[in-house]
Length: 330
Image 1 (cartoon, one colour):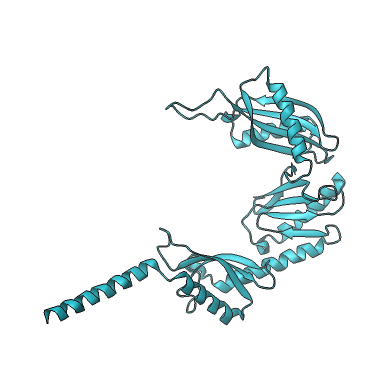
Image 2 (tube, helix red, strand yellow; image 1 turned 180 degrees about the vertical axis):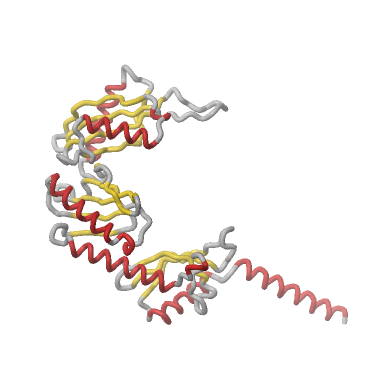
């Protein structure tokens, strides 16, 4: 009798342990996948599919049934969104738990937002199809492939109007990312110039033109510039070495002249002791060049105290300096 009672008690304890572990471990990935497939088939007739299903269990959620997943349209993959779902409850409740309760955001709300974003992008593409044969939106870039070479004023005009169009549809485009326009031309089909777009006062604003590292002449120019800088540093500044960190601004008025800003590291700063760490990247050198002719005009050391500058102060100094040299950035 005692053995029977003990057996029952042990069985109950085992069941409780298994149940507790189940609550902690959460639904299996196989079951999560099956639940999501069932939900998508039921609600969207299989039009939507998913990938990158991964458990999202952390200190913030404390829910082992939470999964992150990429949802996309099977026929139009550009319609996509990433979200977090309680896959154990998705068949009964598709409210998204990672959003504020007051918002009551549902799975379909995100899907409709993704559809609206896609339709808006297509409308923008249609508006510019006669000027820009190929426009490709992605998460952080918008490729503008003109498939012809451009004059400076033409690029300025088209990109100005393009950004105006983006801002007119700011809400519908529904992104918190800061885009960059990647300009492609006949001569530079892999990438010519990058125009960063930063959000200011709820609108995208164009920033100075940057030479694309995908530019077919980039590596040739880089070798020339580094060789030139190294030669100029050898005698007066032997303690400096070139880093991989640089900025390359292009002149808006020519699309050929440019300024290569190269960051330099002071080899005398080793940070091997136990004292306060010091930033060894103290130097900033500028080289003025012409992309078309591969000609270097001149160069100069802008500062040996770049480590003490704020980002804003550094940018102001760079822009003021290269503008005086005729590199138009605004």
